[in-house]
Image (cartoon, rainbow, N blue to C red; front, side, top):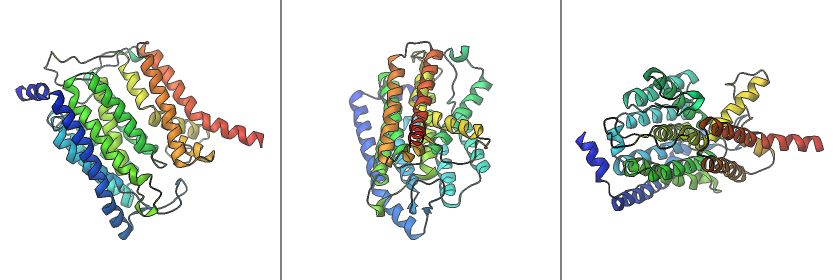
Amino acid sequence: MNEIKEIITGIGIPQFYLKLGLGMLCSFLLTFLSIPTIVKISRRKNLMDEPGSRSSHLRKIPNLGGIAIFYSLSVCASIFAFELFDLYKFLFASLVILLYIGVMDDIVVMRAYKKLFAQIIVTALMVIGSDVRIRNFFGLFAIYELSYFFSVVISIFTFIVLINAFNLIDGIDGLAGGYSIICSALFGISYFRLGPYNYPLVILSGVIIGSVVGFLYYNLSNYRANKIFMGDTGSMILGFLLAFTAICFIDIFIDKKLPEVPRYYLQSAPAIAMAILILPLVDTLHVFIIRLSTGKSPFVADKNHIHHSLLNLGLTHRRSTFYIILYYLFIVTVAYYFRHLNVNLLLFIIMVLGFIGAYIPRFILATRKTTN
């Protein structure tokens, strides 16, 4: 207990900025310098992503970029934000498990139920073992404090949904990486404004940004020999960490036994967190609705994602990524501006705007076909 207090009170602002800057720089360099080796080994051993019916690329591309992201995150977070591994003792173990199942899936393709089982184990470790839970809905759906059982169930469900939803948006160059940078920056700024006891989470957000920037240099490269995808390894790890930071944002706490640390800051916290992570959530719901409306299983892969619609309009990967991120930044801006609205009304506005953004490309495409 005393050690935790010393950790919280011992981080001065100059020291914090030094940790944040070094964490971002080191994570960038580790990813940037390790990817060429991963690309070389992937090509030599033919560990490549093969173009398929759902692919938006035409050539074989290495898809183990997530290993570099994990490498830089695990090294830099454990050095510059080591407090998190004291407070959340199963955090590193969860990342290692996700690395294993991600690499296995990227190389040999795991069965869906095996991946889901591993994800349940990982999220249970965090929710039950590290006590990372959504404890309060702040009046969302007229629900406030949650019982322990429902808190655990809702939190595990949230983790699994976000991990898999983030995996689904990783379909074009730069989208998953660019969106994770935006989300990490928004959560990092929020944590910084909420006080020094949240500085380790700010540093973690900075480390994620540095790592992903190093990856995007190669993911967006026009030089074919250096191009790489993050694969399921990267998307699952980033989805997991964004779910972790989102749940911590909704239920901000350091230690339940520290009465001097305020826990709730914003009545609309769940809606704000939803706005920041709106793209993967809306994209997943939008695809499920289309599949069900056409009589297909919601779990059958297809090309109905938002980024596929933009590609069908003739946009490049980069432009599609830019427009998607720009629109959903607009939603975050709206959510922040109206953050003092009733949480249910704000969530309704956010979801409506999210679905409008998802259907705009399909509407434009349908209009073009009608015109022609």
